[in-house]
Image 1: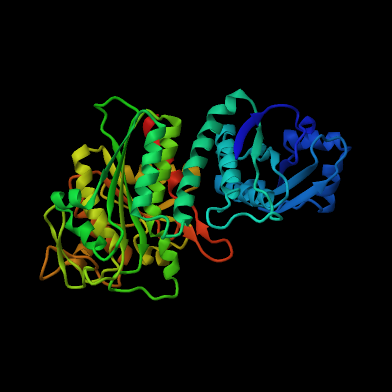
Image 2: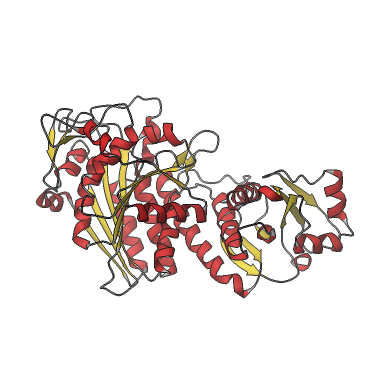
Length: 491
């Protein structure tokens, strides 16, 4: 979908739909006021009669208003003005975007960002609005083509405003492309999106930018490096593992890079510790950490940020086989630390620990790993917040603030020494699970043992990376959080 700005009078814009926001206790925005005057007070009358609802996320199409060049108006409720904030604006804009996507129109002009509220500015409101409209317009069609009589997603959306808002819109476009890439990769079936496919996607990304380099390590390369933890997970699969390294150079070579590491388990059967069949089909989403860091990398490259970024994707498939690794095995990681495997379904931390050690060669300023790591994180935080664990308070604060600024929020969890003892093993330096209590925390403790010399943070996106039910599919998170973090770092 094409996003653009248009600062003409809204009543004069010839479009399929004008999108106006209304908040309880607020005066009409400038665009809503102009439409009301052009239509002879129709907007005011419908607000008074209740035909336009101001409850947050309420949407209603208004047809054939006099005095407008546009065919219709979509009225969107923003809730109570004194409660309006960026997350609530995002929620309302997502509802508007879904209404537009599911309606047989292809163009719209959006004025939702004009509603002012405390703690906001025009640029932030525009960026969040444009990003939400684009995200809501997403429709998966790779293996399910759209039917001829199905609604057509929007092809273009313009937003009320002129040149001063262009930088905000440019950021929204880049973020939207990153989210779209992450969601597409997450939604693809595992017979298509396997480790080789992720390597193919990385090759295509690298070919688009002169300042992006790509290296792909095969299993033989990883074996020479001693990545036996990662390779242990891959042993049961006919699809060979890949370690994919994208390198973006947007700043002086002397500037230490930010390293983003993504868990790319393209399908997780649980291995010999086989998962139940009830929700196993969702395990194609176990590579959403990889999808998220790739999406953030795409957004960064699109904006050509003044920063250096290393994106490392540990891509494997975890399957049961005669050669699969077993509960009771002891694996030696690239760091030399040994790991007793108690559960082959705790595989994400095994591939990430070798990727963390590998990242040290780039002498990164900070390292952030992203993974759908534990069901325990879903129990703890549900589907709204990403779990955050870090060995560095300043880095944790940066990530939390970045998530708040783009409504892709994270909540910090403790990394206390007391939890480390749950990983003690009589047969190795550590075991790969710490038991039922505090599972999300002991997973973070495990990874922290391979990040002792790094400024490191771990994002557990098991609850935030995809949704299931009537509106199931990948969300693209945490592309927003990571991209905002890179934007802040790039200044």
